[in-house]
Image (tube, rainbow, N blue to C red; front, side):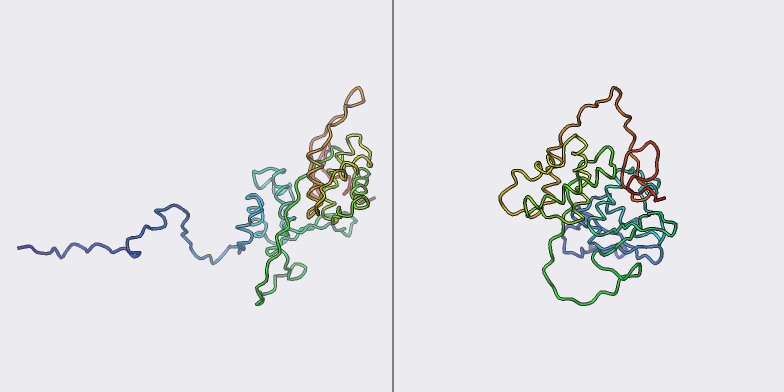
Length: 279
């Protein structure tokens, strides 16, 4: 006669009716514990941004976690992280282009120009000068405007003298007189000025650079004229002329300006020619 062993536990029944658990099919699962101290709230618009690099996203999270007054210049960040000054500078420019950072130059009481950095956890919204963002308000569902894509990188001049950069800005400002479609913003002009300066360093006149940027433009409307200019400045960059002196000048290493964080060449660290303190 058969008897049932009451000491044996019955077989557990599957909660999902025998279907495969997500962990058996690959993909991420989460083991989350609620934070109660030392945490930073980060929006998915940043964590899952489809245009920012992984370096830029990680750097934005780090900056948002810092207290007010913490140093976030390139030199300080390079001492903290192993990515190096070039990658960190590029990530900061990405965040600035997408509105997660605002960097403005202000003059101190001592007359020195410094860079003031504001970290924005929700680009396009502000709670005041440095205060918290206002509470969210109900709003109607509207079609979102397309995100503004960052401009392509442009060449950098070897010696960005103030006079050279001013001439380059003049070239960009005069393009719309030849073709009204080449109307660019001051922000786009600031991005393109180093590229034009790199052309002027190659013994080209401003008129020659003007012709190179306005000749044989496509007949259709120019939806992003600044992007077209950035492409031409990079793709058609002429070679450097041969050095005329018997002994070529020394090429100083790249430094990062202590004031505006931009790269420039000099024998020692300090400030670039644009940010040199006024005496």
